[in-house]
Length: 116
Image (tube, rainbow, N blue to C red; front, side, top):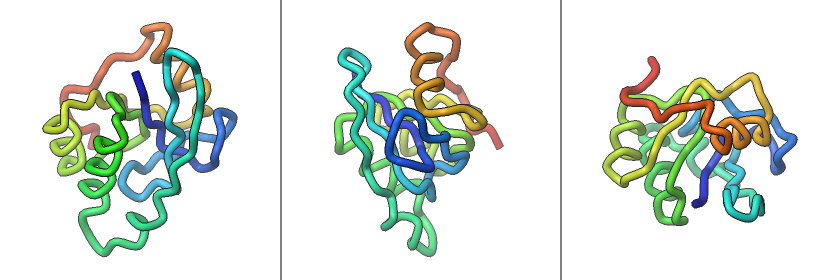
């Protein structure tokens, strides 16, 4: 399974970006191999509106099955759920690697509603 973690940098040691739609980028982690790739999110940062929805569609197109971030707005949350992705929120204040380990060890649960 691939998981996308909003990130302030390109690697597992980078901090989770608290923003989803306007995150600097995403570290895409294959949970089976722990292979990590970085996807820049600059285009969504420049969007006047709809950044979360655009980002959700882009990640779904990459084959991601789950998203981890700090805050996911209501429209982005709806778009992610409609695409069949699990959403893990309140993951900020930790590194991307720590967030992924929380998912791997089952210490986090998917959100059922936006967190703000």
